Image 1 (tube, one colour):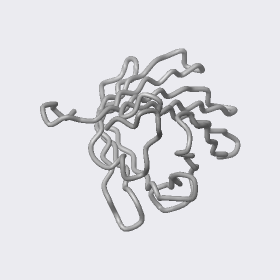
Image 2 (cartoon, helix red, strand yellow):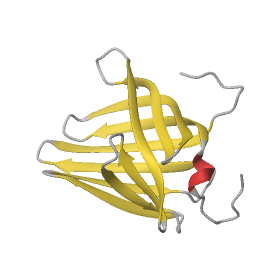
Image 3 (cartoon, one colour):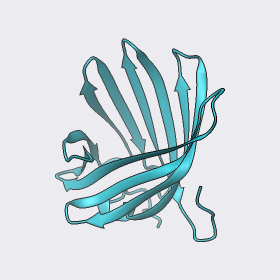
Length: 150
């Protein structure tokens, strides 16, 4: 779907997305990779986000990894919640590039969403704390029926 420079709405995320993630761990001096599928499914409260795929870390066998969030329509965009419904962060869908934060003391999670090449989009997480210093770069693109799932 071409938005002609405009940004998506919550319903535009519904469906299946191919995801590729690079994990840059500054403390360990290592890079990990994750390849998988993200599925946005309509539920009464909004969209259920479920991702599953293979996580590959240096010197370790690949392992299955999953995560789930709830995306709810909110004034000016989307509230992203943890699976239990507690607040995580807000995405302002009024702009192509937006930054949000989540404090989980003693750590700080900062995310930057880039929708300027919609329907491809990117999320970059920077996590800093006394025992954490890593960046997650995740690229999303629509999954086609011709592609195999990881």
